[in-house]
Image (cartoon, rainbow, N blue to C red; front, side, top):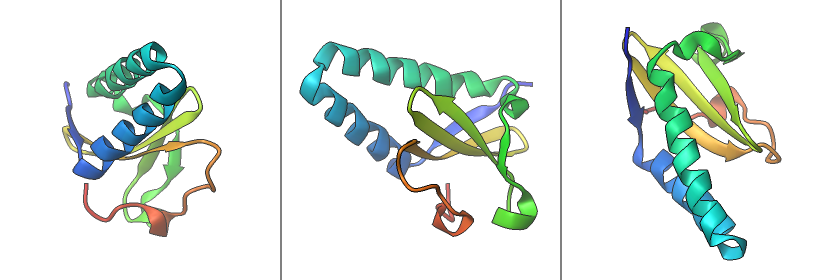
Length: 105
């Protein structure tokens, strides 16, 4: 089964801000990073359950999974045939709590 990937405007903005930050020191590396991140996110269209649960439905109101991408974390949930990307964050940030997750994808 192939899943549709859905990125909110917030996630798109988070990716762009990370890209701009990396680009300050390494423009070419930033371009490669962004492309590889997009490819990794879109790979979730097949077998998105392969990554570990970060929060179960009882804790966060839905299952939230976590995919590592270098020092970044991609948090997402699966609803039938749609993978909602909830956030992309640097792993050095304070750990996210269920209440910090966006309520809408």
